[in-house]
Image (cartoon, one colour):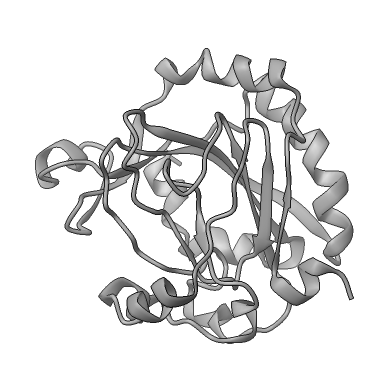
Length: 230
């Protein structure tokens, strides 16, 4: 049994060529927040971000699946990720930014397990991938996760209430991710954005892969498509 099966995650350092990463970074000014969280964990989408949030600690961009650079990176990721799934498919990609001096921590699980129908489903239904767009570590908001936590059930409403915060903070690790590194994990793994005490925002490119046979049903309940204008 390999490390993904046991720990629930894998890090591959410097997997993506620097030229592709630089090309993404050169386009960061094209991004806009479509979903965001404030430092007090209030959530808003699109136009409501500016009117309803007192600040922005973390925000997600519009979908970037049509960017040529993202398509090229996906071709380097899918041969690693898809063989682990029965019939996986690239579901979504955006860029997440953790702002400078953010102290935000909110442990959660990813799509599809954040939705009640799949919360207790132990199958490998989704894999989340994070590509570092610059060097990141625990001092610059590398993602926190709890190894082997895919064997437990974590309920979205309890995640949002902070119920798992103390349990997470006692057990979480933050892998070092040099520029162009790939972190991928079972979407059942409890993980979180972490504080960013550095003097620069932390940017990361995200890829979500889902089993094909649940995608249409997930799309009907997943707010990312509404926030992206679909």
